Amino acid sequence: MQTSLHHCAAPAKLNLFLHVTGRRDDGYHLLQSVFQLIDLRDELHFDLRDDGALVRTTDIAGVPADSDLTMRAARLLQAAAAGRGMTVPGADIAIDKHLPMGGGIGGGSSDAATALIALNHLWQTGLHRAELMQLGLQLGADVPFFLLGQNAFVEGIGERLTSITTPQAWFVVIHPGIPVPTPVIFQSNELTRNTKPIKISDFSSRLPVFGKNDLQAVAAHAFPPVADALEWLSDHGDARMTGSGACVFAAFASESDAETVFRQVPSQWRSWKTRTLDAHPLAPLLLS
Image (tube, rainbow, N blue to C red; front, side):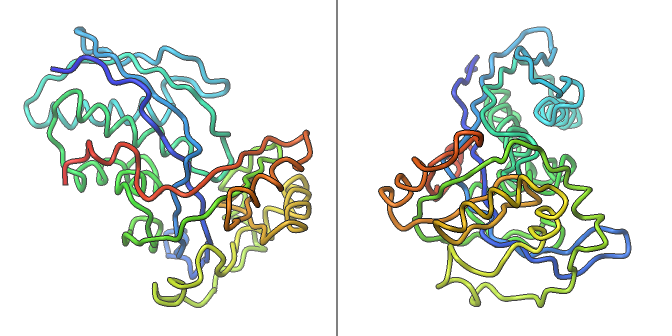
């Protein structure tokens, strides 16, 4: 059995658009979006233990190990293996955290998905992609997307995924220095919840610029730094927010165009020049 797996990518995602099309009786919002993988990432490292323990060996400010989605994912997979009559080793898990929390780019969800993929491989638990996606849904609506391993048209509350091919593009991503709590945005009375549903064919030839983010106006009003970043980036491209914020981005046709804008981003903001990914870097480890 392989005993370690290091430098496991947990890529970020961008919502190329995000429409809120309704709200269920249980309060969950109905969405349509395209989730785009990008090469901005966290990295995770896994070393097997022989005592069955799961130990996070790195500290993450403000995230206790017990509530960390990565550790919850590892415990969930260990329990699933036990339910199949398997006894699996534990693991030491280290996380090189680069993605901002509360940024709308899926950092915690991506870390959790990477843990499920890597430990399923190391522990030889044999769960297939669809089974991992069912486990991931228990952790959050975005986790199954990262387990799908491909860019996707997303519907429902985030659980209905259709793989799509997206055009190559470069992005400038800005984090305005604050986290945006997702519940604050979705609970706002100002949120529009009646955008007309679309079909995949409506946008397939118009990405990466299509539609809008229905959460953006609410976030920009409630969190002025988001509005400031959007205003600045709008002078250089079609700026929009990803997810429920706080990160904002603009797409560019070439690396040189993105580089030109990236070099001008005010120093008080974290920023990145990044590009599209066609597939999750760990997709070869997934059992279809």
